[in-house]
Image (tube, rainbow, N blue to C red):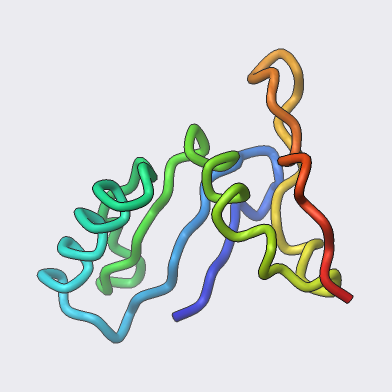
Length: 99
């Protein structure tokens, strides 16, 4: 399963490339991600295959959950922090890049 973000880097949405899973499996993963981690997500088709789209409104929550595990070389693949106009949150205080 791969992860991609908005190509323009303006949006904060994240897509899990779950093309090898069935639609039923991806729907269940969306339910689990919402229930267990509070991520707003939905099934989105890409080339006729199911992927998981995570809302930009859950971006900071996603960072809270994953930041301890993100290597510095992978940091550039994530969107930049939301502007103060969009939210008052910045990267979590514990967000440190692994080297």
